[in-house]
Image (cartoon, rainbow, N blue to C red; front, side, top):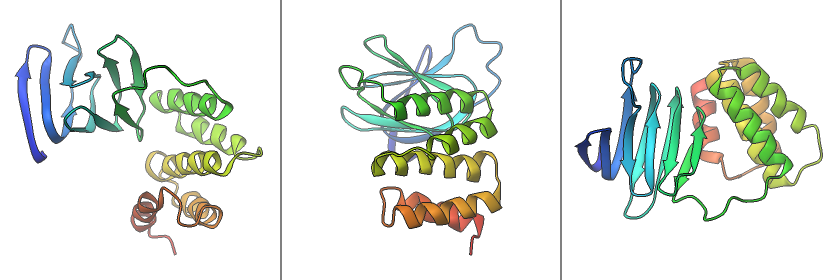
Length: 188
């Protein structure tokens, strides 16, 4: 734990009052109810996984490293979080209209949650063949690079992809994450 985390034990699991905590939960098959981490805007239902939670006064975020989690908002809405994704709360008051890119990302999230990373990469590669706004292209490209780097661990393809990503989106919004990926891969 870091960031002066304050955690309380509750019947369903834990409550992160404030701060940042990396949480790993395993062997949940014997529990009748999922382990949950309560936060200000709802609860994160843990299905055997590793993730990092940051809780601030009235907002926060969870980043899933591996496994599966579901965020259950206080208003009853549920959002599945796939490995490599970050969910920020509170959730928007009304769901945004679904765009083609949103459908691609939803499909990719589903495939990732099922461990079908090769198929998820293929969906992203197909989507990137179409004309897209630059911000959308950068987001989809980042997702593809993340899958190649962290899930498929395909160094050669990942290095090629990240080089293309950097050419197409120099100084983009994922620059820090890109530097980390390239460092871990040892790309030239």
